[in-house]
Length: 118
Length: 114
Image (cartoon, rainbow over the protein chains, first blue to last red):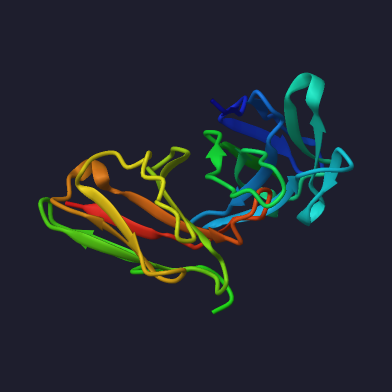
């Protein structure tokens, strides 16, 4: 069975500092990997995803994540935090199927709330 | 519309009443999902529809919860005899349904049971 672990339910950084949000997965086959962001009182928005190819994935708002198979990790980073980055971030996985196979559901981590101090 | 649309956006109901939450997926999306998010917690999978296949209901927490989908369009999540622990945001999402596709979320229906 697949599972997702996000280390740290709450991360606080200063404006301009590096953002690092950790995500590890457990799966018999490397899954598809996603990061979503949820701003206060809003739905979830996709930041980035890894399906195949280059293991360093760039997303919106300057975020990027690197898939490391040996570490079963997909940590999210941003070189310089901005106040507008304050939100909750969710890592998620879905089962990797054969081409054209149906998707199945997303399994989410418990989320990490990012605070940015001025 | 361009995105996943949910209604109502907010619902306050009395304990014991039934509620219906509606989801309009993105046009052409064959896969539709319902998730629940309790205050301060992560997303809990409820149910998944994919085309004409039998839905994956493995996440429904009790028989008070049910969902239907008409073809590849609108879905309704019904909660019967609501309890206070049902208070949560109910998020609907849709996708093209193929492995690795992006799943797009609506803004949710906030349910408060008093």
